[in-house]
Image (cartoon, rainbow, N blue to C red; front, top):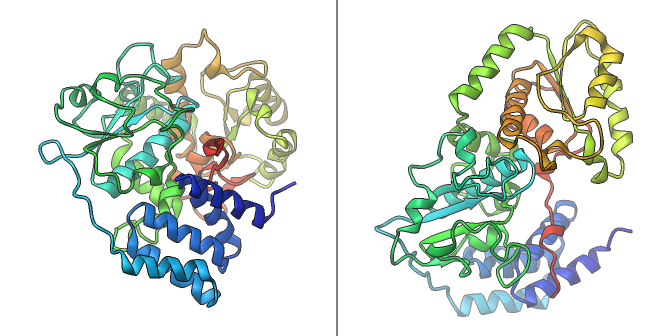
Length: 414
């Protein structure tokens, strides 16, 4: 049973009373999506805005709560207190005039890690920080070295590396669990402890010179806090993702060369891309079988002569599609599993090969004329978001991960 709005607001208030703002922010945004006149949610968001130093936004949220309910005492008291105690801006700390955000690996699927980078890039943009990536040994797509695995697949997002940060004397860090001595540590209180499970908004007003993002940073969580004067204000979430990708995601030339060669040799102008996520995905989706059964219905609406580029990690799915569509099916030569263990979590997997293969398949899918996928898979969500598909040419059988606020990963005992 879904918790009631009253229960959700009670949970938000409990977290807020303990100084934790991520869960209240997400809960109240979810409530306001369907009930934009909820005075309690507006008031809680106003308190969140105070916490991150957004005093003008806080005042507007308190006033919005009072417009809904002129007799709502908490919002009236909060507005009065805000007016009586104007915020004092803390000057940002720098190292030789520069501020940095170190973006560490999320440690899950390839595109989950990349969307973590994109969210953190937006955070860096909003806070005036220079982004620095470092996918360490906790990345599922590293060759096991100390090298930044992100740089195996993409050009650097800035001229700086973790090596650069390690020699910056005099810098202070947020959260305080980080220092120059442990920047390469893969799990430094990521899930438990004082600074565990931090969200994107925890970083918005921090003055420290170097911030470290080691937990998932979602674009959707930052979008409500984009200032009205910012060039991305008013954009859709897909437009924001495309902007970030166009500015920062530059695949290595040899990867794009492989994409070009495969497209020239195998595709035509009407090729349809289909992403079928099998193997361990069934453990994450209660409606896994029902969703996958709907693919054929959607594909049957297209021209029966159209070729189908099938992206899948599952050899069983590849065989089933071959049986149904015959020579219409196009498959890239990549590693696949024949059971419910994900290929990317097998200890014997060639991790760099897996990363390159999923990149090639993803960029090939975006060159097709239409796309059908499962929005609860990051591959499908990325293909849907990073290309401006014509109307009716992109079908996600379930809503995109990227447009969903994940509250549960931030829940802790309070």
